[in-house]
Length: 161
Image 1 (cartoon, rainbow, N blue to C red):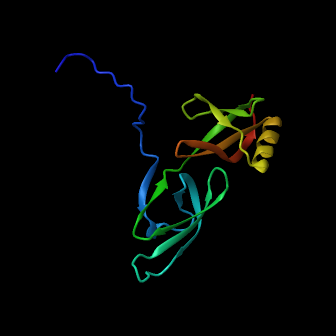
Image 2 (cartoon, rainbow, N blue to C red):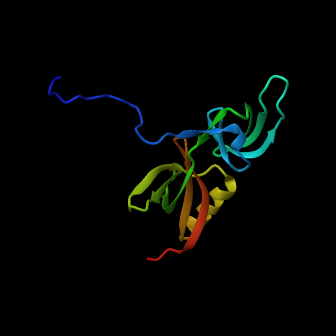
Image 3 (cartoon, rainbow, N blue to C red):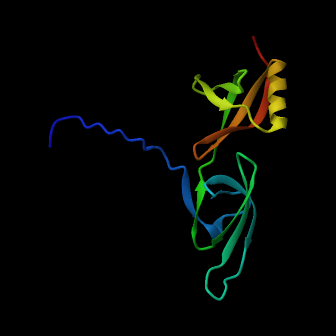
């Protein structure tokens, strides 16, 4: 073995996995599931009986948590499904740029500038109106599988100068 330092040009992520396996039969309504490589929230689950050739099947109807699209999947209840690791974080809104990006203040006092305004019209108008009035706003950012999006808004009162 040589005494040289080894350098690896790896693009692999050493962080926690973006999903974890869970048995399909244990997934319930309002849980999260991955369908067609998209993180979704389950809105309906129905389970069929075991047939002549074996497995009971779970039929999932779910809504993509970022796009709002409805997706469906049928999985044998004894098989594993991918479940996304979904986290929610609150950040204080500092600024809205003209190109649609927001500037957020993290708990550690650093800024986060890589998020766009939400596509949901109602939430978008609430954020713009509250920011225009000079209110102190806290946005909730939902993240799963490497994607992030603003999903909620809280008004914590007028800005203190």
